[in-house]
Amino acid sequence: MPIPARELATHGPVIPVIVIEHVDQAVPMARALVAGGVRVLEVTLRTPAGLPSIERIAREVPDAIVGAGTVCSVADAQAAASAGGLFVVSPGFDPDIARACVDLDLACLPGVATAGEVMAARKAGLDFLKFFPAVPAGGIPMLKALHGPFPDIAFCPTGGLTPQTAGNFLALPNVLVCGGSWLTPADALAAGDWARVTQLAQQASALKPVA
Ligand code: 3PG
Image (cartoon, rainbow, N blue to C red):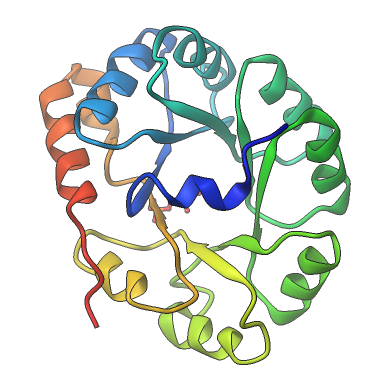
């Protein structure tokens, strides 16, 4: 059985969107995030190191709940499952990927940015969606507007959020968790500055809704 997608939102207020350049960064980075209270890790498939990083984290960091981001094809979803990922995040909604996730026992968090995409994803049985790219696609006013016709749909806004604005998103009734790349800055990963990653994770874990 896959973990329910909404479970991804129950381990803290922020899901980090991670770009890994070198697979050797994966395990210490994941441990640093977990030490800071962040367990759900979206490792993007944007770099060649993405997939092997998911594999290593799944094997060596048992407290992490690791999944694949930037999943753009059924083949990506299959690769994520083979690597031991537990969920997939896509920038957009593709019904083929949603169906594949059911077969692969993966939780599926596809991106949507319009009412039509919400309807298509809901038709595929999904009720927890990534709102992407959150700020360019309308930010808080758009999420408020979507809540009217879709009170049953919850979102993970991602794209353009900051530690300063995430609390405003978390205050919305249809936002369960936020996504963002600020927890794992490229320079911190390149320098192996795991203390900084833990500190950023601690700060993210402590974020509260700001009405
Ligand atoms: C992404 O897919 O890159 C995410 O949306 C991260 O966006 P951010 O860098 O604005 O947090």
